[in-house]
Image (cartoon, rainbow, N blue to C red):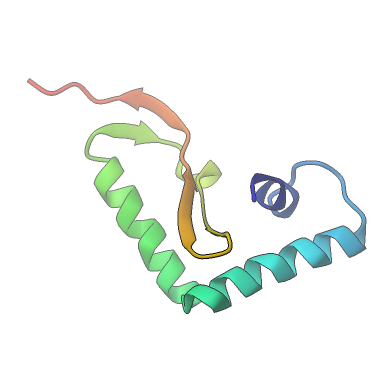
Length: 88
């Protein structure tokens, strides 16, 4: 799944066929989980809001996706942390 995200967000260079296949995988996973792009965006915003209470993150490089195996779907998040916030 990480390879799919890297290819979609500017990682390794792939052929058009590989890119199209990876995008289709992401669409199928979202379809299987019954989650619309709007719901994924709301989920992403909620994650940002909660995590931002405790740390400074790079929202632009944050990636949230669903990963599918045989029996389940997992939420996978890659969130670059810039700095921890200190509480007193």
